[in-house]
Length: 108
Length: 284
Image (cartoon, rainbow over all chains, first blue to last red):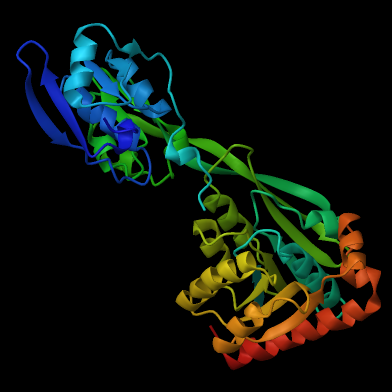
């Protein structure tokens, strides 16, 4: 699992009933600004219902929540372990951003 | 003539040099000081100007009319800052990411986007004796400094010798402050950090093809690497301000060097003449 939702190089979408999956490259991974919101929008367009990720910033959290997508915290392990933990109700649901985005840092 | 005072590293004495250069030169020529260090403008502490007007600096940010919006997503696609996110039934605007380019409102086929001003900071202008004084002030917590720096630079009075106090670093606001200047004075200190950031700043002025020279602050006999760097790169060291408790005490009370000891007034006038000589020899 990548530590930073917006900067993750790929997202893996999984049908938890069949465990069919697909890897989607994240075009926002190297964005200078707004990576989280852009990545979240990509997942909205892919009709996902829940996201498990390391840390999710304020813009991504805002987009995912407004789109009705549940956000879970999975900071370590493999994608398979995260999906299984999610299905078994072992992941903590996230209500607020767990970090501040890169865009709030002073540009030096 | 526009002279920029920059350093790369913070706290090397940019403001000390800029304000003393302004005060010393003001005896001979009309002078203007532009404080472009908008995150932390501090030249006012030494010049103590009276500010007579202040203008808010805004950028246009999008406002979406939900009655007209069809959530087609074009606005988000064209936004280079990813300040708009389109989800079913809604457009989310992250105004603090917006750089005000206006692409979204141009792209919207429904004319659903209007632009509203978002305040980034202010430009404050006044006088300190005969010196025309302008400073930018970025709002606390704001990250987007560039338009405020640009607004300060617009106030440049070309009838005067303009001295620009530049922010530390080598990022966009610094480059914006250096645009269109005739000469860049690089202030550094004889420490590994001072040398490191002088090296970065020297690369910037070379890229911008600006004539430049160096002032070494807190100079002492121990570390000669800055001098060696300047020598290797044909950078003239125009002034050394010694590591001296009296200089620090004056600074701590907000008293300019030229007022603590008249010899500094002579020194800074000479610095100005040296800058003019170098700028005329190597026009940028």
